[in-house]
Image 1: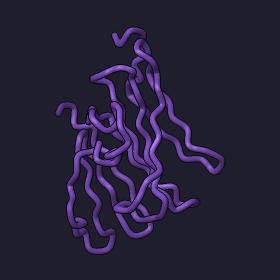
Image 2: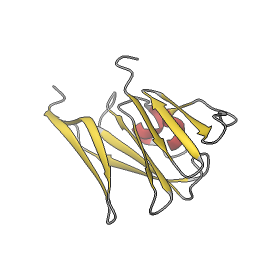
Image 3: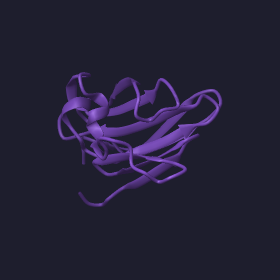
Length: 135
């Protein structure tokens, strides 16, 4: 897909790279790719239901919270409504492990484009360019 929306973050032992619709986890020391990768971005929401599970629309962001030792991964779901921002936060420092998953709805008319994610000591913050009626 174009544009590629390349994105990556370094954790304690891993590097995660997400390029538009696929992501991969690498060993930080050796550069070896983890077994089973790359994967489609929406596989993070397998079993979650709704647009986060079925749509793999891109505009991905991956960050590592070094204070909490957690990965934060997010992409939008905009090929169906309601428009969603899909967020996954790892339960450990292992990017290949389990995630707590969330879907934030922007309704049928507020298109959340070009998301940017910030990791702060008190919370995770996200901003968008919001377009009315998806235009």
